[in-house]
Image (cartoon, rainbow, N blue to C red; front, side):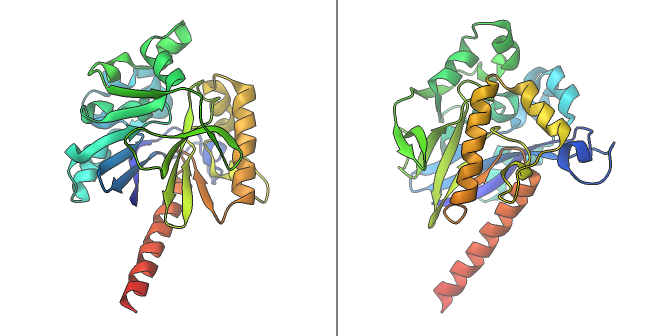
Length: 289
């Protein structure tokens, strides 16, 4: 399988070093929507979808005014998953499966661009987003993003153990190298997505954490505003912190086997893109020897 690292939506909130740890206090701090495009032998798979074309065309209705006010997104057509797939010389119609970490607006905004794709997610997340039971759930999810009636494929908590994580499972119609890894906390149905890539694994941890330093083996750390955002948006603080501790242990003890990254760190996105280029160059060199 071939994996592409895409940024399908940039946010530019003010916060400077309190958000990203870099000098300057009142400047805007870029935050990405890190999505994966996976080329398999049977079409394309997306992990998360970013803002989507409708998020660009009608951001207030599609993403919500509160989201716009909090994040100051840069809504440009070139960053949509559809545009980037075309730029790679691929056909968006070949996206047959989408795996979502959760259904917040910046992760589910592009679902409608792929109406024929099967959307894989945990049952808890599906139920909260499509049949909200309280005002908090109703306000969190944008019903308009699901009005095209996605082809849902939801999963319960049954599954196997994977590097210490429980209830991990493969997905219907997808290669066994793509797994759901439950990571509740940010939302009750939040999940990570593990992808076997070459000799190791990638683990898209969604919004389990936001700042790259939170997984620093030398000592986890996080700027104050970034930490506050995570607390503000969490549904279950205790479980979120438990899963963050597990991710920190995973990154510390298995860094040669697994690359863990969040949905919103530009530092991690750039590093993984560099790694991919280096790996491809090394691979081509070996083939030519």
